[in-house]
Each structure stands twice: as C-alpha cells, then as structure tokens.
Length: 141
Image 1 (tube, helix red, strand yellow):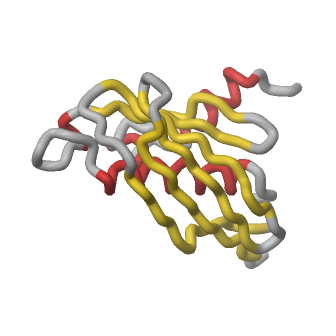
Image 2 (tube, rainbow, N blue to C red; image 1 turned 60 degrees about the horizontal axis):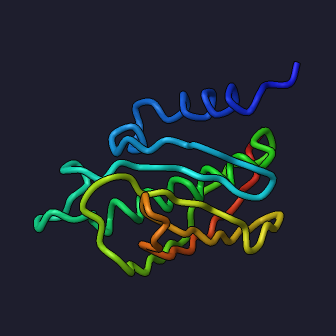
C-alpha cells in the first residue's frame, strides 16, 4: 500500500525525534521528486546574543534539510550518507516567525551529491544561500 504524502511526512518527522532537529524544532514540511522543504521557528532558542537568528542555527537547518534530501533520494539499504562540506552566505536578519529551507539537487551522483539550499522567511525574503555536498558510502553487508 502506497503511503499518502501526509503519512510520509509524519513518518519522516518521527525519525527526527531525540535529535538536533527536534531541539531546534525543525520539521520537514514538503517534498517532491527533486526537493525537500523544512521549517524552523525563530525565537530565543536560536538567537545570537543581539536577538536575531544565529547563523549557526541557519546552517544547522540547511544541513539538516540537505542531508535529509540526500537520504530520502538514496537507496539506504545499499549506502549511508554523510555531509562533506557546507557553506552559508547570510543575507538578511530575522527576529521572529519561521525560516524555511528548500534543498534542491545541483548534482545527484552515485557517490557525491551537491545541493543548493535557499533559506527564506515568512514573507519569502531570501535570508541565506547555502551549498551542501554529501557522499554516499557503501554499507558493509
């Protein structure tokens, strides 16, 4: 029986229990054939000392959504996925609301993947542009 998109999202978010994603209240909200979207609330849990979204929290959101996309679109019976490098260019500050990260593949190779991750706010303003490279390594059977 094929799971509905809503049931798949529920299943995906269950895997995030007891992880950094739960600590930062990151949830996966949408996915398609070549993208994955997550959101994170902007509040005192993710502030830097002057009361705006911490760049490290933004990078954690970006790496979470990008890594999860690589996992979701890989055959996890054969490989496991690890992040190799992340870059983040922060363009605008956010004080409240939510930020949304959309990961899309620039390269989906058998061994390496490169993802573009755009982080926006509630008003669709571009907050950060991130790149994540991941690697798929064979599982020992």
